[in-house]
Length: 241
Ligand code: CDP
Image (cartoon, rainbow, N blue to C red; front, top):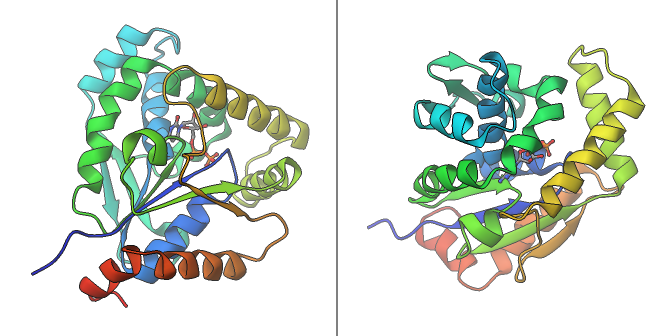
């Protein structure tokens, strides 16, 4: 009989590489991967599309109650196209990466009513285990009993460079200084908000990816997971290693 699956929670600031690494680890272990930032981005996309004031908590909350967000894993081996996210059946996977979403998402994510509405959805997604979930409050609020908690860091300069390159590669005409301003601002709002701020959970392990190659960080994380008491056992029980 299948035992309780393993739960891996990843948190950290903007553009720190949580998504790249989260997908890679999930792929390596055959786990489900949930990017909770994509959920906040999807809501922001709909708010902007409907010209709703980003400070109108009640209006946004009403909109969220009437919105269907679904995440579908895509059968592909390319990590770039790992899952698709839908808002009321419209595929918004690419649209939520637009810099205008970056400019507004933290204003909406700081609203307590919206965060409360999303707790249930996120916990439900993680229910069966064998999952990597990443965001800002996963280890602290959403999944406090996660088997493994990782807190990602990297120097601010490196994070800005990574996000700038990512957007340029996607064809967006962005300005380096503007990206820098947005990342600094987003981190500030995310870590200073009252409700579920970005925080390192007490029992989270810090992963600093500054000047490290992707493969190096991946190996470091897999080693941590396999050697952690209970986690390694769960992987064996579930026939993962
Ligand atoms: O990929 P990047 O690090 O730029 O951001 P993201 O993970 O896509 O998250 C976008 C925004 O959603 C964050 O800046 C937060 O404002 C919000 N967010 C949050 O508040 N809580 C989460 N668990 C995940 C994201």
